[in-house]
Length: 109
Image 1 (tube, one colour):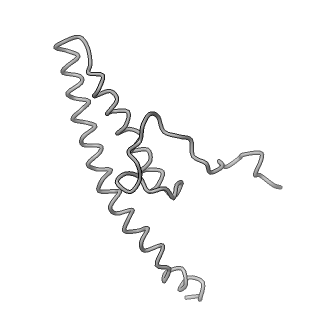
Image 2 (tube, rainbow, N blue to C red; image 1 turned 30 degrees about the vertical axis):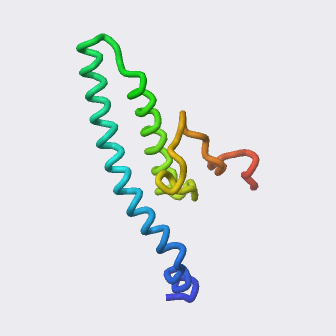
């Protein structure tokens, strides 16, 4: 093994991120379960009353944004730790600050 690979394996920050990734994978599973239960409840509510619950819609948006933030963190597209280490998301997800592949501003031939 080259020295570079050994140094990379020994990086404490990478191992700490790995532990955060395990935690957020677990929280992702819980969030998806809660979202599924909420969707089912909203559907039943719509069938029975003809309307949905505004507070549950806002909660659903928050959970959806939270799931997005977790996926961004797990896929290394964000270094920001989602809730409970950051604030609970409000509203729609914010666009990633990383540039996308094929961005003319960053592509150099």
